[in-house]
Length: 149
Image 1 (cartoon, rainbow, N blue to C red):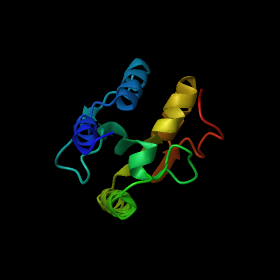
Image 2: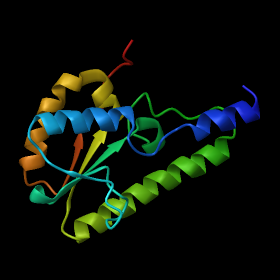
Image 3: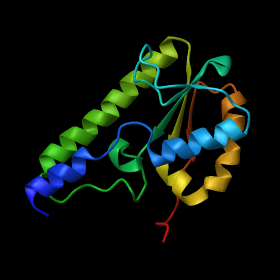
């Protein structure tokens, strides 16, 4: 792929309203949860905010946010230093924003893309995380063991 082609492809990647985010929104709405989207007054502009539960939800892509132990969190073979800095910066920013939200009294739930790809029907475990009391949680608790074919 040429550099202009790669630039074009990368420019098409959305930061919000992604397929995984839309799947989570659809599921939660169907379960009766009501939420706000992308609140700019909160650190990190969470994908979903459930004020009733004092909870924010981030729907993270495993590649971009480096889901630990996930086979989708691969490292590009070219421009290694650029990508290492970029992706490590994403993880640092995520941690900082989550910490700020917790300090402001919000609970944080991170839903990983791989969980949605592999077990969309298992999203039924998410409502318990929403109504629970944990300050921080991730779903799924551990990444799937193999790629979905």
